[in-house]
Amino acid sequence: MQDPVFSLLDVERSYELRQPGWFRRDTRKLKALDGVRLELQRGDTLALVGESGSGKSTLVRLMLGLEAASDGRVLYGQHDLSRLDAEGKRRFAREVAFIYQNARGSMNPRMRIADILAEPIRLHGLCAEGDIPARVAALLDRVGLPVGMLQRFPGELSGGQVRRVAIARALAAEPGVIMADESVAGLDVSVQAQVLNLLRELCRESGITLVFITHDLGVASYLCEKIAVLYLGRIVEQGPTGAILNAPRHPYTRALLRAFPRFDTPIEASLKGEIPSPVDLPKGCRFAGRCAQVKPECREIDPVLAALDADRQVACLFPVMTP
Ligand SMILES: Nc1ncnc2c1ncn2[C@@H]1O[C@H](COP(=O)(O)OP(=O)(O)O)[C@@H](O)[C@H]1O
Ligand SMILES: [Mg+2]
Image 1 (cartoon, rainbow, N blue to C red):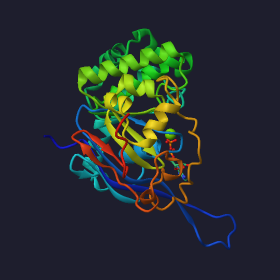
Image 2 (image 1 turned 90 degrees about the vertical axis):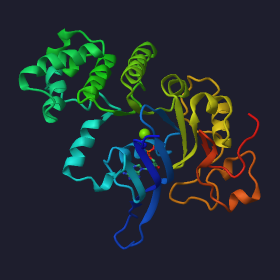
Image 3 (image 1 turned 180 degrees about the horizontal axis):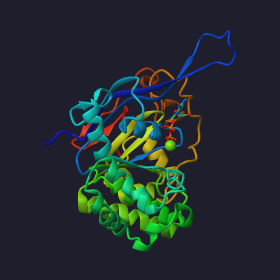
């Protein structure tokens, strides 16, 4: 087997929260990620799902090298992301692209679409200056937009068109990996479907590795072959999309599916029961307080993500046996 594209080895990311008042010296730590284990193979399409605040965006920021892990390691291929040299960073920036949640806000409103798309090509020196216009036109065509749009400004485009431009810009450097944070949230359902279709086609055609954050299980199952479920900063279950949706093994995943049985229901709202504060995680399993099948051991032992069978992993002392 090839090396994974990304490996996350017990990754932790904590933020120091400063207490109000200059005399308070103690700072408290919020664990946004805690013991995250993840391997991404080339060509994987992975959905990160979980309630709001579970750590999805933080995880992607770490994988993009925008933030460093407080503990543990994030490997890209065999290289530690925090130790890339200048050449390694350049390669990484070219090979791993990001589609911003706020596509419009990520574009300079005073730049024409042609220039927005030319920028990464020029930055990475991907072709001769004279060949850039043809390359930009091809990119626009690839995301199904007419060439006439090249001379427009972002403000003149619809929401769906702007997302397509954002995808085209992500594709400009011919990346092997694309990460996207809620890239279709807030779009009209029909426009959302078009953008999803486009992403799905691109991944299948080009073998792109995709990490897609969504709180919509329908979007996750349509677009991605694998799902990782986050709860309070930890991946609690991971595996093939169909298997997870049909037979969740973690009580949290099962609760999510019961509470949001329609696949097009966003899971941004919370389940019943109180989520512990990420500043004050309980001893033992972080889901114990809300778990329907909690046992005394669960209040003592913190379960890490471990293999259940060849392609399923779960962080639970007593995985659900029957769906
Ligand atoms: N820069 C930061 N400083 C302090 N806390 C943060 C910061 N970024 C994220 N958090 C906290 O980390 C947790 C995870 O956040 P996030 O990754 O944005 O979750 P999600 O994307 O799943 O909604 C939340 O409790 C959030 O408040
Ligand atoms: Mg987020």
